[in-house]
Image 1 (cartoon, rainbow, N blue to C red):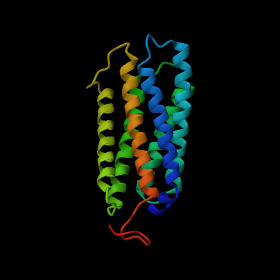
Image 2: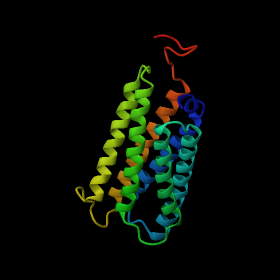
Image 3: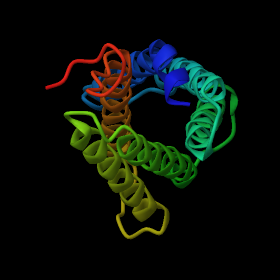
Image 4: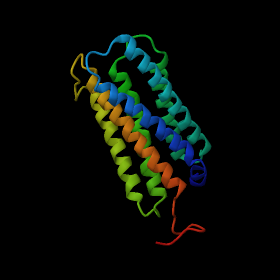
Length: 200
């Protein structure tokens, strides 16, 4: 499985770039002066939905191409949740509660967090394996935070979309960093005991 992931590192990098774009748009919209008009925000949310759907599809493909043990299934689960979120934003026309969005983010964050922890443990020969482990723990932390929104342990101010945009932008920004770091480590693993690898 690891060798397949290494060959397909560019898919995770592409997911990271798309997630970074989504994050920037959320955070820019958060700082928009004045109220967000329906027409302006609707166009933006549809565009974000399409980007999120594309990110999810590429994540699913990365998981399928590296399909082996349970670890790659976590990547597929992350992609499915991301695709569902994107499809809702792009095509859903009815009312949408933030709790629904938060539930999908919980699935995304928990699945990628466990995946990162599993990869860090598998690739124990990385000099900086702790980075993937820390990213995994932080992803689980995001899952817990969004779970708090679902159970209303943390309450958002009513009528203030800026907080929702801030949390979504923060999660996608963090997700982008994780995907890019993972893809770069897979591209240049530097395994000390692998053929052609250099000992530190």
